[in-house]
Length: 332
Image (tube, rainbow, N blue to C red; front, top):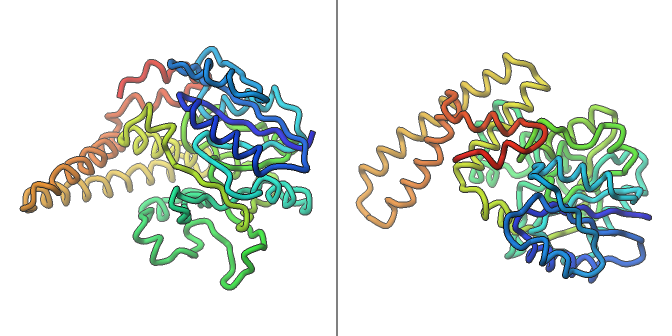
């Protein structure tokens, strides 16, 4: 079989129905299977998934997290290439075939991704990611990215004036859509168990590159990614802010050592403290009542980041449980 498509579900079964329908519409000429791993969803996901014809459903007894559930799917799959795909995606082109062509045509291709689009078909900057550093994490802002969209700081190595049909090297890909040959997955050990949510894709790409393979984006392959719709059902924004930074900290700890990871945490403390103070001042000075709820919302998010940076969000450390069972006991 050419391809195994693995989708992890957490209360997103209705989204998966649309995703699978577009896979069938835009994918032909290759043999493939679709495997959905349900991460112990507490809703009626299993009932809905079983009504989708032609897919294999694996019901996990507990929430294994994103990486753990994908690893389970890989174990039950048989394709020579594996595509990890988010449930909140739909195909609008023959993207899967185009990515598979890239894998088959380049013997150095270790992982291949596509361009991710918002629902209005505007590009998502998150489809290509850099390996985290203190600097790029401090400057991780959409406004700054819009000023310097092709900066190497964001992990893109696309040359100016490159042909839109030419795959180009990147540092890392979003886990929303990443294709990896099975032999390489087996070589690097799949997704690391130390990440429950967020950071698994960065870590996987890091291991692939460290093993000597290249990471590509295929620009003409496009997929719409609604971005966070599945996680919004179970997590608030403050949870994501803390969980993402915990994952970055863990990645830096493993790849750059304790001193650098501690420096990152201190940098986040300073950045969060500055934002909290500015937001307090802005909320005090703002006249229009309509802006105050938004300022309060942003203040709450950065306050949680500040609390995490000084060790007051103790639940975040539970995300490192390799079995994924701790997640159901986390109170946020």
